[in-house]
Length: 489
Image 1 (cartoon, rainbow, N blue to C red):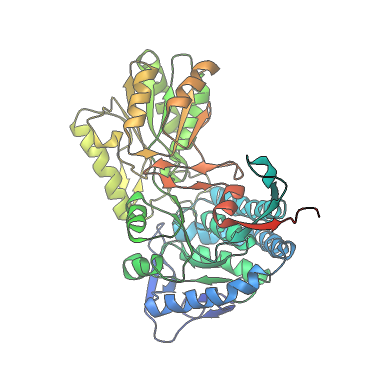
Image 2: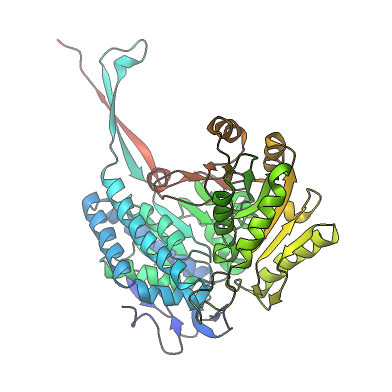
């Protein structure tokens, strides 16, 4: 499928104006595997002139793409989804070596992405306009009627993260395209090769030239310039809270959609189904080594069941296998994206130990492979209670009651998701109504999806609402055409 994407020397070109372009003499960035440091490939370190060119191309192409009937845009998206499905195994190997994702998780990401693209195409076809009569407002007769449609915003900048370089790229690109926008796509540097394979699928599906254009390179070199570009109409970003806040501070009078960090708590009450809670917490905390914004990042458990829960968690976590997923398909704890990420995790663990937290399990590190860590008796005086480790570490914080759980959860700067484990549905709703988050999961782990559900964060966890229909709405605007009706003669 992608044999013509890789150039000699393992160089991956950028896609602009319907062509794969590699400029002679351009600086290249080496992408090395987090599994063993081997060279996966090279991408171009693009400059500001390259950004200008991508924006110009997208701006010129947008009026033509806007005029393509929506059923035709949807057909292209369906073909792209089919191409991804047909070539899922190849995509999985790219994800495995570029970002260290195990094959099972990689396959899930690719197939979920194909489903997302199909659903986005069909959702856009079924989004109705509306007509509004003037007589419903006091003082007006049947003298006017407003016909309201949705119009694309123009050029969308899509910026994706390393951890889901296929899915979280498509979740920006697909709604933007089917709504009639053109896209300038800036993938994370680590993850760019996987993302370029996704773009190849759109090209093979017949996407017209100029509608989707890529820009690769370091954020510190072109990031600020790209997000403040004058030809940009919308920013869709997933990444760290630190970078998200910087973008929000730089951008003036441009709408944006942001998915940022989280410190998602699992609240376990005295009547919880503990086997259910343990299964969901371990899966939520440790899948892809916790490198997910929606990972369970702390457990708030009432004292009367804390000992039992801690013992059950320890047994379950001890069964997790750490290692190289390329060599063993049973591995669930994979190397972190780089050694800096491992440094961050271990520094939080050491600080908590120094302040009296009890290490129940883990603490072993081999370069960027951190074996799963479980810590008990973590207190709110420790950084691990508040900071996002983005790694395989889970702190247990013991609480008196549900009220204390709410207070601790809401003291966080983040507000992405929370989950509650209880068999008292009235109590679950009462707690959920007071948690300052975008989503509360009842008797289930924190996670993104299904993708047509609204997905959002409050406080430092994001701006705007994602989810297929919500993303399409975010990247379009209402347009009203008012018909003035002449009075009867």
